[in-house]
Length: 438
Ligand code: URA
Ligand code: CA
Image 1 (cartoon, helix red, strand yellow):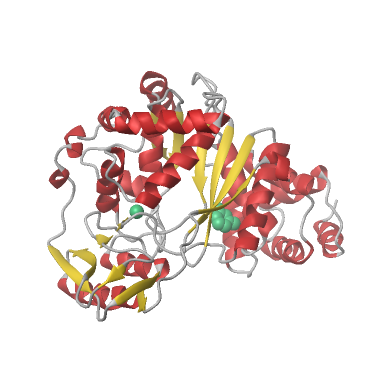
Image 2: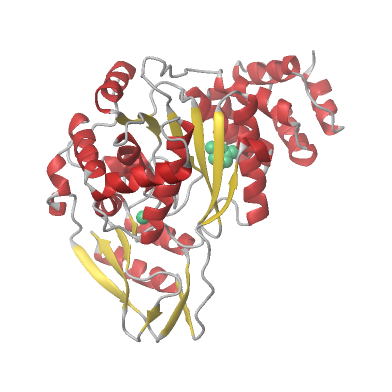
């Protein structure tokens, strides 16, 4: 086999076989196929696309290219939730203990944030004492004991994807649905779950700006999961404004605790209930969506989800007292309100501008090596469609540096558009894609 023939085949719109993809992926990881040939192939895929079985072959080859996590020692069906990334997405912190509190195990590997997108591991590390690096044995025995565990990446998962993603980044081939879908699914499959509930974000603050492309990405990932014999469903959900009210690590932990107490923002609470419902159904814990939702609501109302959160925090070395005393979380030195310049309805709350402002405050990483400040961030006081008077508080900015605070007030103000008309309400969940749809 020669790489040039495989590039030519894809260039001409033909499907590569498993053997041919194996030759490319293994050859690339072993350094036998040079970047320029792999880049030519990714560009050919960009223009010609791939067949569902072909994408699945690629996904499984990448998933198997490095370490994989074996969760079979955990009792029950392990369902993982994955979000394609948004601003202020606090769902995992709520969903993991919520789903575990009704008896469905959650064994999750999460990442750190980069750019305007926050990472669950950084958020968890703002809990004093919380450890995110457990050995696989510690992780598995914790999930068997209390039903929940979230850890940072151990070992090297899907190194083929890591190499390929870096190559795509510098060859203008990131924006290819088969390549994005296989990239995400390869890492998920390597992390060992039996099934996946995917939260595919769409809108200004998301990777996919248009509903049609988000739906295509969701369909492709559901197709891969199904062909790879993992139960998979996807919800296409709104990211035209930040999810919930808080952006920033310790602030999002506070928001998660309030949500577990039933005092959280409506959109975050609702999304957790809908994703949680899919997880319960997939795990076979309920026979229909109504029953699943009732179980989750009961658990929230009766404090079982919050109790599970405390148990989880304690198991990973963190201080469970944070649920009773939020001041135990890292606190910023400065806090200043952002006030509306005029009265009217909030038309837009731009998640990209707020994500960037939070990042410049220190809540996110500008580069992979940046050190983040867990205490800083932004707490929104209004959302799309709310009426504000002149001078009303739009948001509170939390900072540890006066200069950065001043800059964040400027950028933050640009994130809000205020006008006379009440804007139409936007759905939180646009579509649900199941195996039957693909
Ligand atoms: N996220 C990924 O993990 N991979 C992609 O290709 C794009 C977004
Ligand atoms: Ca949030």
